Structure formats: C-alpha cells, structure tokens
Image (cartoon, rainbow, N blue to C red; front, side, top):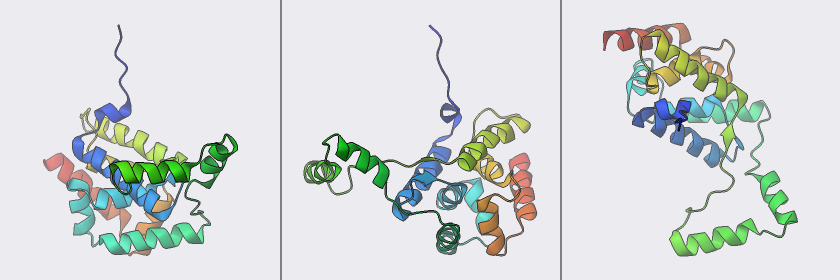
Length: 184
C-alpha cells in the first residue's frame, strides 16, 4: 500500500502553528478565505526564524494585523463570517446557530467553528512556493522561514503591499531570512 504525502506533512510544528495562527486571524476578521496577509500575521505571532526576521525589520504584530485588516477592507474583502455556507445548510434544515449553542454548552465557548476558512489562491501559491524555497536550500521540511519566503516570492502580492505600507524593505527582509537560513 502506498502512503500519500501532502505538503502539510512536510511542515514543522512551528509552521503548522503559523498556519493555525493564519486561520485564527481570518476567522477573527470574519473572512472566508485565508490570504497571504493572514499568513503574515500567523508567522509574526509564531516563534521561529520568520518572526525573528520580521521583528528585526521593525514589524510589530499589532500594526501588522491592523494594516492587513485595513488593506483587505479597502480592497473589498468581505467579512461574511461564512454566511453562504450557513445559508446553504439552512436550506437543508440544519441550524448552525443551534449546533454552535449546543457545542458551546457541552464543550466550552468557541469549541465549534464553522465554517473554517479555506486558503485563497495567493495563499496556496505561497505555500507551494514555500516547498520550492525549502528545496532550493536542500531541505525537505517546511519551516516558518520557508513560509515567509513563499509569501515574499510573488511581486505585488497583498502581503507584500502590507509590509511595504508599514515601511518594510521587502528585498532586505528576504535577504535577512535567506542569510539566517543559510547560516543556521
């Protein structure tokens, strides 16, 4: 029997935490998709080389989150909180509010999150690029620094726009990550 390996299986524990942080950021903002801006927030709040490099370049988590939310709002990214999925289930007679209420009563507040945001196309491309970044330096595991390099790989990406608006020199940030990665 053949074992199927996904890209997620290559993530280190820290990289997985960063992805969870990105999902939590998207959920908090009511977004149905995890964008590269959310990935930046997840990386900034997770220990590891990526957050160290971001901090070294002056990225502060609160400012990053605020600027990401501001830019997404300005681009018209809706805070729908999964209205379409909830509505679709409602047409089948499934009351998500009641499920949430019962789950909260049985397992604690916030234990049922529906829907879970999916990855946007740009976030999927960044994750794919992170695998390429890891392989380029001879590594098979994807860590936070590879995820950050994946986010930084696409010129004009929304996450790059967020960093630029915060006054971050993206080329210098990328060079810092590569230098630390190759030195370590």
